[in-house]
Length: 208
Image (cartoon, rainbow, N blue to C red):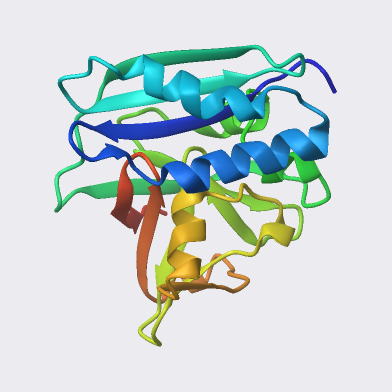
């Protein structure tokens, strides 16, 4: 498995710095260690250098390959409106819960691109993926959260075959979310959210 790199996509805010930086670096370091990738220790310095003269909010993308080569790119970032509502649909493409690489954020994006391509941007803002058992996993670029009115948000466990999202990790650590296996029917029984570290939590409406 050498044909991919690790990725971290962060938001930078002038005056405040990188959002959830420690969680991003921890995930990158953990994934690099498990896969035998070198160079993770250099990531923070490269990130800080990339935003040294930044005057606006940025989307910052860092990649790390097996040899330890790091690349950082930036682009202006416009936050989602607080009342944003994303239309989401369910893909026929399935994730393999036994694929441990799904737990890490990498450039190996084929299954997510296949799911996204099932619907046009006019039909869906995000597309949700299930695993081979019919369990809810994640969106193509987001983690999934369900408010069923019983307290903390529910989010699928990593063992279902999904990314350990940084926003997801933060909400679990804050006890604002807890892991629970979800079915398609469950998504109809509460308020649905999708989200990631770049964009935060976004209210979602399932289109069936």
